[in-house]
Amino acid sequence: MTATENTIADFNAQDLLQFAGTTENPVSGQAGVTLPVDAVLTFAETWDILKDGLVFISEVRVPAGGAATIDIAFAGTLKGFTVGFAYFSGPDVSDNTQMAFSITGQHTFNSGTLDWSSAVGFSGKTFTAAVEVSGQKIMGNNTLKFSGNLSLKDTAGGPLSLKLELSAEYDIDKNGILKFTASVDDTSPTPASDFKLTGSYKYIELSVTFSIDYTTTPGLRR
Image (cartoon, rainbow, N blue to C red; front, side, top):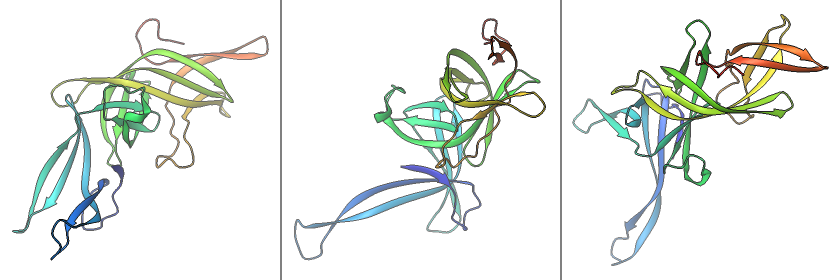
């Protein structure tokens, strides 16, 4: 199963969901003999996140003409990560063997409202979110990892809480501003984006220490 950008010109959509598998097809005139054939089901439209979890909303063509809208719901577990979301078939988001696919997206801190914004898919449906940071670690080479909980506030049916793990590269720009950028590899479909974290830094004994504003919650400024 893969989640990619839509390339089907007949559908005015930005997201594509593909299921790949194999069908066993009976061979005419040969009882009990089947021939395996690769099969790919493709759906185009947009991702959404509800209180009950992940949903793909797609428009399908019907034989009689016209179109119908279907919702494909996923019963597993969703996790936020640096360039979007990861879907796990089971409840343990620390077990990478349960990860089924990833969905491009973006997480951004809004210094004006002190909330986060989380966007899912190439269509970029955006949710207001809150982040509770439980751990962070400087990895070296100007790389920072922090983890915690992401609560999407305005999902249909109520808020949804999920695990969050982000990797950021930090640097000081030409204006002396400390900047945190999503740390992505060359294969990522999403370009590196600015997390827009705010904070300050200072030099102590020839090293730099900094504090980051993740939220207004007391004790979560690092």
